Length: 390
Image (cartoon, rainbow, N blue to C red; front, side, top):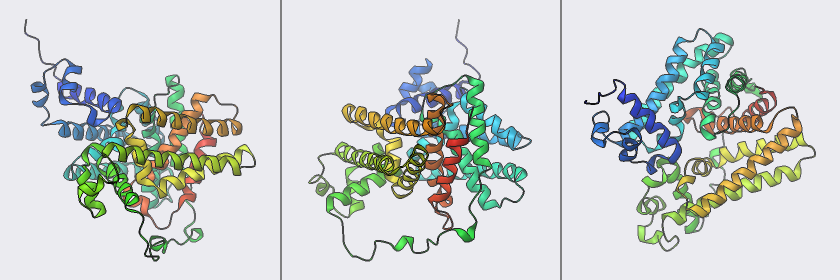
């Protein structure tokens, strides 16, 4: 008997690719890997998708379509938030793909994705304004991105709670973000000269630091596997052979970059814990330091979030240990402030806070609004940490 092709094969391929991309990272998955996981031939996969990059684009767009359909059908903000909570706790993990994997797309594909993401944000804003009539479009867009940051956070971890409790926790966190208050514009600091700071001395960093800085930026913007040593040299204004006088290979650059990131994370945590007079202040200082780090070192934090799977085993294990230690510092501080909550719930909340900060800061023109600084993100993060309960 000839096996019949399932009518939803295209969706099955997309779902299988999503899991593999999330588990291993885009560049560690081949078309053959996806086909093998589904028990089909590569030629059968190519019948639906031109190549792996096309498959990634459709995976990412599929996640956005799912979210957009939910928002369009929602009769109010609470319905939308509960729907998003159920969606991200359930098996449909495509909603987590757009932030983590988009850098692997080519420029034309990224433009398609940015436009689609803007449509999703635009469909959330009226729901926010329905619950908050005085909200402006600009502020609504910023808050919408914070809400989406909360619901994208489960992609960062594999922690679970009983399903209903997990959904309630994420709903509560989403509601806190949705109803967060923005600071009054007249009370905000003037950042008009911020872009000119540090540009008048005429000093240049050592060549090795220039190369590392450019490598960090390129790894974050394009993905480690898409960057060549010649790209890094060109960005620093030297030929590729000059790069090898400072770094033996691209892996050495990635290791140096993640070591720099680890040092910044460790230093910020140590300073916060040293300066704090009590657990509540420790939590506030940890949060403030994290916000500052994400804003000031966006590319460095970006590769820490997305490129750790490209490290050699020894360095990858060391980085995971650092990340676990950093999370535990946050858990201790938060548990002192909220002793009524269990450690798993605390970790889920902390991941949501860190994901929201990361997503908002990296959300294009919204992150560049001159009327906002880290104070709002710190305020929002504290509200999520102290107010979110399942």
